[in-house]
Image 1: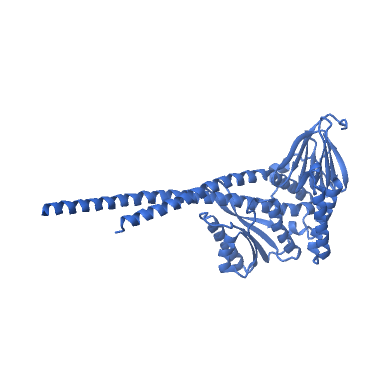
Image 2: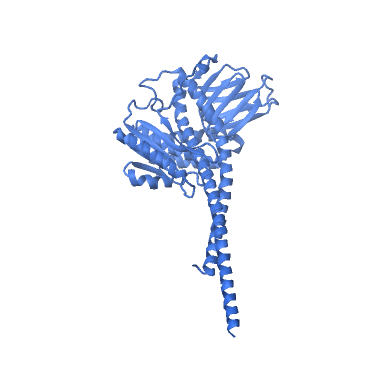
Length: 294
Length: 137
């Protein structure tokens, strides 16, 4: 049985752990709020971009001469997977779930005899994927949006991908990230970036009387200009979602840790008091039996 | 200060990836289209145009003009709404010409050192943006 002093030390150490986790929780909560505001603010651009693209794509025919970002290379052989995780840990199952999905998807592609290339955003994802797919990882982005995520961060990633695309180093590109569904739920999501996924024209939209648009210079030219921007925007959205999700996951994890630490302190205090009473009783018995002996 | 050509207003929105920069009722907007500048008044025919780096002039109902530099993008015009999507936008008055000149110098020297075509094309674009920015002041 541990001594009273040992109990006291244990309790003190768990208390300081609790202080740390609860501080981390509060920091994550405030960062989460900021990330959410940022994600919301970036919504209009993405929506407008998507609207415009759908309108443009409806206007033109996709053939071999279509831009790479829209039509791909026509092959399906080499897949580029962009895996977005966090740089830091202590955020529950956040990175685990995305890595698990990435691993499943990559294995599936390999089973189909496709070539796979991986780009990691975030240290955590790279560290785990390296164990199994070290030869497939071609680049890692670290420290993106350390202070605050900017559009320039997304452009850095998209430029890298576009350069690869210009050299025809892949045929299809997917991004894997945690979609921020709510504070308690982040959904690992896989989205196709290249070729640009054209939304199916549903009946409703088609039936709408559409204004006759003029295009300057023409639809193809604008599309060529818009597609790279759209790639950056989609990556930006994914990064923002992931950043918000990371903070949300950390907040939940730290909340749990704080609660567990509290439970542990209660249990230890109970045991400490019991031990203390046993000690007092023992001393009393010693005194009494000593007095009786006199 | 010029009197508005038309008193009818429409909505002008300037949207950057990170946030909406402006959303206001205006009487006229002049945008640097890829094929030349064009003015937009209320009830303009719907048009989608690419933009080159240049200055957007916005006229408010009071006749007051505002000049905003954009690094390129797209304009989507409908009768009641003119939306400009731009990656970078600054008020012309806020441009620090010394800083831009310095950046231009850096870019030019980087461009003369660049070897591969992709980097060259990127730099050429950045230089064009910086030059247009300087011209806007």
